[in-house]
Structure formats: C-alpha cells, structure tokens
Length: 128
Length: 131
Image 1 (cartoon, each protein chain N blue to C red):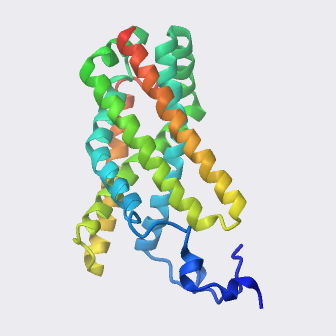
Image 2 (cartoon, each protein chain N blue to C red; image 1 turned 180 degrees about the vertical axis):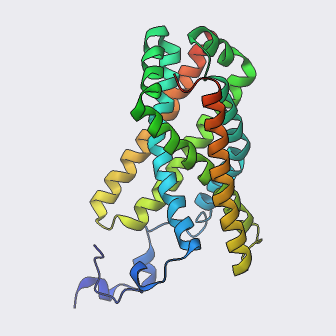
C-alpha cells in the first residue's frame, strides 16, 4: 500500500486547481474567438491590399491610427487565443509531466514575446 | 504514455472515419499550424518597422515557391479555423447539435473555407501574384 491510498479525496484534489475559476479558460477562449471573427476578416483584407504595396505604401497603410488599432487588437486577441488553444492540445497529448510543463512554459513565453514584439513593431510603424 | 494502468476508452482506430471527427481533428491541426504561422506575421511587422531591406527580404520569402506554398496552406488554415470556429461558437450558444445539422454545417465549413481560400488567391494572382 502506498501513501497515496491513505489520502482523502479532498487531499488528492487540493492544489490541482480552484473550483472557482475553472470556466475562465473556456470563457476567454470564446471571447477572443468572437473578437477574432471580424479582426481576422479585416486582417485578410489588409494582407490582400498589401500585395501590390512597396515599402513606403505598406508603411503608409499601417501608419493610419485605425489600421494600427485594429492590427494591435488582432495581435493581442490572436496570441492570447493561440496560447489558450495550444495549452489544451498539450494538456491532452503530452502525458510526461515535466515535458508538458516545459512545453506549456515555452508556449506561454513564445506567445507573450510574440505579442510584445508585434505591438512594439506596430508602435514604431505608427510613430516612425 | 499514460502513467496509470487503468483501462483505456476505445481509441480512434475503432471508429468508422466520418466528417465530424475529420473536422474536429483539422480544427486542432489548423490551430497549431496558425500558431506556427505567427512567426511570419512577427517577421513581417518587424521588417516593416525596421526598413526597406528587411521588408524586401520578407517579401522575397513570401514570393518564393516555398513561401507561397506556406502562405496557401496558412490561408486555408485561417479560413477553415475561422469558419469552423464560428460553428463551434454556434454550438457553445446551444445551436446545431442535431446530427444532420452538424453534417450540413460541417460541409458548409469545408465549402466556404475552400471558396474563401480560392477567392483570396484569385485576388492575389489578379494583382500579379505574391512578390
């Protein structure tokens, strides 16, 4: 008999997550998804209008405050949504605990750094 | 691998292949692909902020055969994930769970995502292709 068998069910679930905010992940994933519907469609149109644009034209297009705000909103919602989605994929398929924790941290760092870098680039384009 | 020796529920190979499971798998696969595709978005924004030479380099990559191949894959992934995501949002609102309806919306997602991707690339090539 090992020690785990002597634990009460309550002791076993303690530390594995709060009973109060379990739906937070679900709700934020849906809210970012909802935001990404118009943001994605607009970003597709932006990408299509950039096909023929040279450097100066592309910069001028993103120099407009409206474009910058929408692109910044897209970047934030998209990286947030990506982190939440990849988190679930890793939870489902990576069963080696240390590997999962490592992958979760790498994904979080990538998404946060990706969002910061993109936002700073947008700021530089708008102010430059 | 699972760390306990509890019995496992039947896995994928037990089931007859069907549309709904294909779309479910593709939703995850396209999500992962799009997350990888953010690297190109970051590169594009950084290059545009940095100057004409880096910008030309990123544009050059997009115009290369490999770059265009990736862009076509990512554009379909985006259209599919977007359409199927709207299907998921409808489910979250409680609509569309009846099996015949799940198939109708499923085929609609396939058709609309392919149509959107075709329209995007017709628009790109009408402007002279990626460059």
